[in-house]
Image (cartoon, rainbow, N blue to C red; front, side):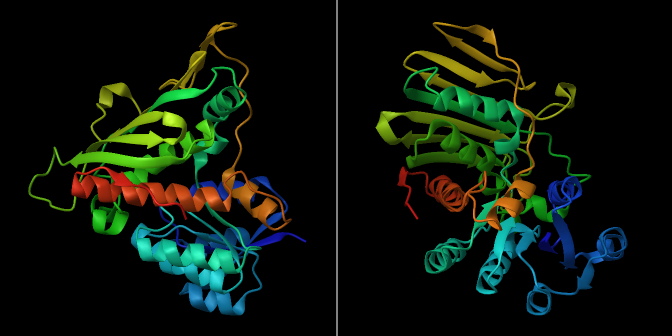
Length: 329
């Protein structure tokens, strides 16, 4: 039988959910809730039943997985409700922006370990970052010493929803944007972040107290490793796209993903680009199929929750301008 998915919301990275459903005949979009103007379209394309709210959908449908793609400020309560309904649940990033909802989610998972929680950490399915993971975790550069991650883009205010620019709704750039690299580096290095010092600022709209468009973070990691991460929405249109990179330096070499997606490795055996890269993987399809068959998804529950914890703690560090210890969930 197909995995039956109930979709709540159609914000941000919902196309990744649709792509995962479309690529697999083992996944069925059974129902949608809070889909707004797209409800009829989804009913016609997928035969999905339409609900006004997630509670009615969870109560009336026999679902396996809840996929949540709402405004970030609305996601936490739906993630909790999905778990309480006995469903596996994966959501767009950030999973939630409230610490109390993250704590509640972690508690529910401890009480119901058979249920899995994911986030759409698409970098884990990206060929370049997957190759970097293979290189670093395979020991090709020795022990990890220091790392660097950048995630930056144009603002695109004219095409993005207004909530995107209000940290009360989006969580701000660290949970909403840089969380991709926070999770990717935890996955690639195998090291947990232990402390964070951060600074964010508003260089575009000083009259808006709820907007940030640039930031830098300094992390302490296990085994005396360190990492610097940056985000900004100041990419010039001349760059023609996002500017995202990651570099990991080890005791025996270094490896990186460039802004154009190449993977470079420099060690005693190799100097330059690494090919071929692995095939792209859809992290939503991977989650839905593996969670329902008792296997560990590419984005596992512990990673979904702890990467979220790192992002929320980093936001606290940016607000307090102090070095903050990162709790383990």
